[in-house]
Image 1 (cartoon, rainbow, N blue to C red):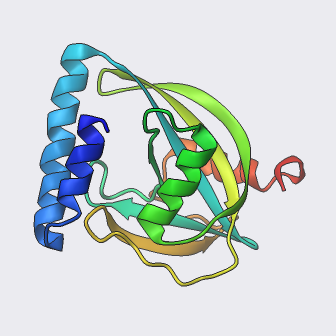
Image 2 (tube, rainbow, N blue to C red; image 1 turned 180 degrees about the vertical axis):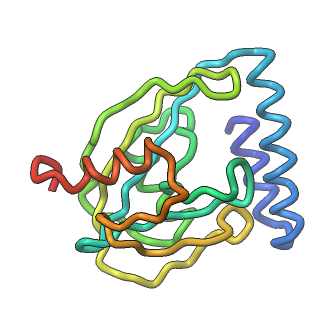
Length: 167
């Protein structure tokens, strides 16, 4: 179990307000570490589809004003596809089906080089159960009417997820 996985396991036992502070402070500490060490990391983002709707989240840390895709780091020994399914379950409490790879992109952010694997996955249920320590909000949006406060990456991956090739 990595240091990050151990920290997350400890944080899950804290009350929600304390967990949010831990995520914010931890994210700031990670950014400092990334600037110094310039690591190569790997993560996933998932376009969670329910028919013509897509699920977007606002995190409690980082760019909190922006709507984003659920996702996170890939754990050691985990495949990107397994990480995508795990992150959807952890962050929004949904069981995703049939993940389809949308591609991978090397992003440079806060000093790190992050290989982000994007997936589209379908869900049947609409009952969202967010991890309130990590997720401030989660909401369904029509895929062709996303809010203004989304990143170009999110907008592009949502568009790609609705191409016939990836359905």
